[in-house]
Image (cartoon, rainbow, N blue to C red; front, side):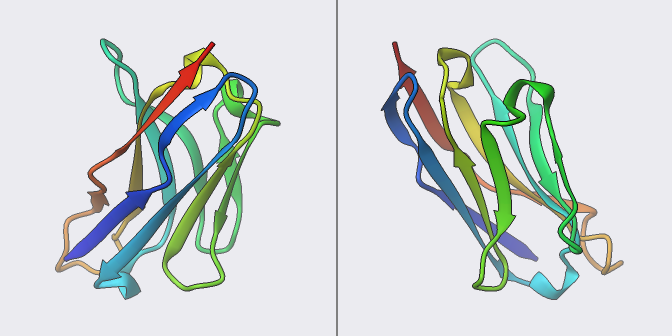
Length: 120
């Protein structure tokens, strides 16, 4: 199994910054790609950004140029630097990990989510 624990959410003013982190534990050797998703009230969960094990990144158009995803110096950590936050960025942010490297595990795991609130 893989456990993902997010941290760093909170309340920020529009235009401000937040840094989210995700710590993975358990069968982390099975993790390949990781990513951040978000879900606002009444909306479906959507992709924010992903990063492969090789460091290639992908971003939703709505966050390009403002958000940066990275895998930390400490192995099995995932970060999301969020700058120039807008009210529409408010959501619960979820850490996601693909674990297809190990057939004994489910294909992916999710964290419990961390709330980001943006005040205008």
